[in-house]
Image (cartoon, one colour):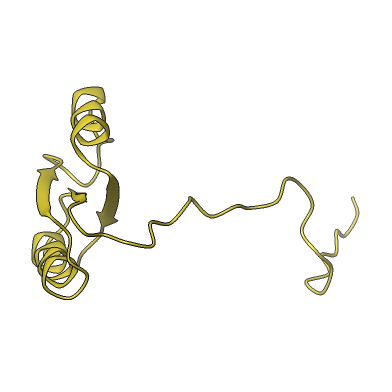
Length: 94
């Protein structure tokens, strides 16, 4: 039996992380809001959607809500949002 020591000051190993491409201009773009089904996530995403329309000029917002926070979004939900939206915000709540 041995003791394994982890040094938190070293860089992580593995592949690097890259952000998804960002849209500079939201005018006339469709924003998808994917609600994970947790309490209050609908309220959070409703507020975010309203801000993206009023302050960033998004054309419209579509909303999709998972039936449960404990299950993954169905392939149909993912396909719907991917087909209809230019960008997607995924929200949590509580």
